Length: 117
Image 1 (cartoon, rainbow, N blue to C red):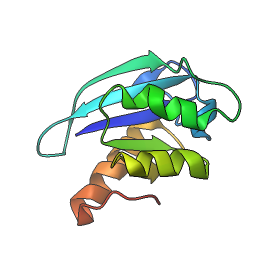
Image 2 (image 1 turned 30 degrees about the vertical axis):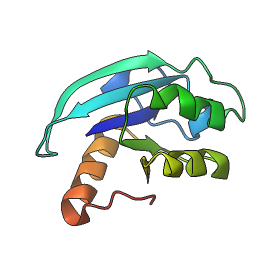
Image 3 (image 1 turned 180 degrees about the horizontal axis):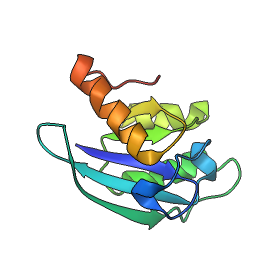
Image 4 (image 1 turned 60 degrees about the horizontal axis):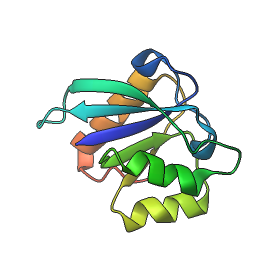
């Protein structure tokens, strides 16, 4: 499993989830252990497609990292549809990145769905 998280800044796991997908400055890409319980590796990468209302273009940007799930405070319908067409599950979360990843992993552990909250 590989999780993409939209970031407000470049602080990675210590940062906060951006309120809107298309307006994030950076992405955190987190590789998750096969048992779904631990972050094996994470890195911050720039959102080169970032601009106001640029969610659909930013989807292509983050998809290049092979994510299976994305965490964002919110996103437009176009971005949601684009992720759905690629089989990427959306998880809505606001707050610290570490907490968002933990909440997603707990949610997946509960029912395995990981759909939009």
